[in-house]
Amino acid sequence: MKFLFIFLGLSGFCLLGQEQNNTVNSPNQIKVGLISEQKPISELEDKVILLEKRIDQSNEELNDLKKSHKKLLDQSNVLQSEIKTSSTKSKKDLNLLKQTLNSQRDVLQSEIKTSSTKSEESLISLKQVLSFKIYWVLGILILLAFLGSYAYRMLTGRIHYLRDQIVKELEQQTQQLAKEGIRIESSDQSVDHTLAIRIANEVNRIERNISLLDPDTKGLKQINFSLSKLKDGLNAKGYIIEDLVGRDYEEEMNYKIVEIDESTKYKKGQTTITKVLLPSVLHLNKRVQMAEIKITKGLA
Image (cartoon, rainbow, N blue to C red; front, side, top):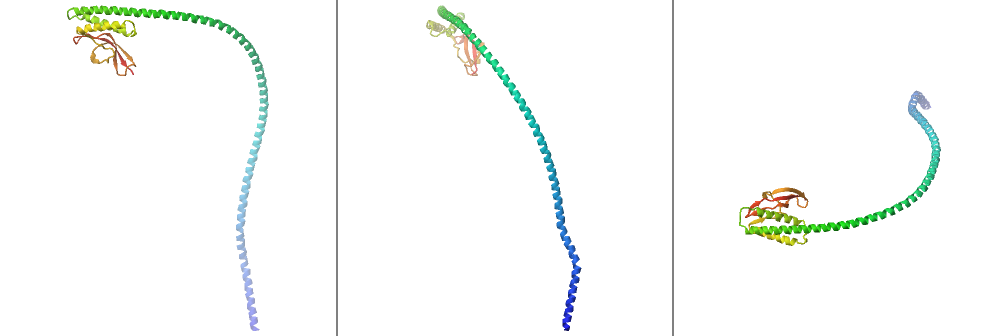
């Protein structure tokens, strides 16, 4: 029994100590709980502030949208009024244009009718004039053809006459030169070369004239034969007429150049003797007359 009372007393003392400890520790626990609950409240407050800012920003954007929407409405109203005005004006202009076109069409139709009538009348008169002029033109053409044929016959006859006269003159000159050549053969040799040079000059002139005639001209063969006999007679007396036409000209030739020409018939850099005005005459390989020539420089 004594031990039972002692045990109960100890247990009661322990319980009393525990209650005192609980009473001492409960305010601390309340403070800790309050501190731990203040953190989520501050976070919630921050979120609320952020949400309020976003709401204010959204309100501002909404106001801007309302203003822009109002501007758009005003502009659309202005456009609608302008469209109505322009459509009305365009209708009026279109009606005016139709009226103008109709009036112009009527005027053009009347003018076309008038001009067609005038053109028919002018066409008839033009046909009459043309028919009259055609007869005149045909008559003039026939007259010109007759005159042309007559002039052609006259010119052809004149050309043949002149050609015959030239041939006769050349024959006379060759005969005279042949006589003078006979004189040279019969006379004694002397230092005077006047007659031989004269014959050589005439031979050169006749050859120039022959080069201008048709090779088939009647009588040219006889003239060429006489010229060859004259040259043979001069050669027999020691005279030589140098054949220079067509030869290349060189500075050492020492001829007298009377005329210089240029032509694309010859190669560039080539100089050719194309005409001999006075022939080069040699006697016993000594020049007794210097040639007077025309040279042509090539351009091709």
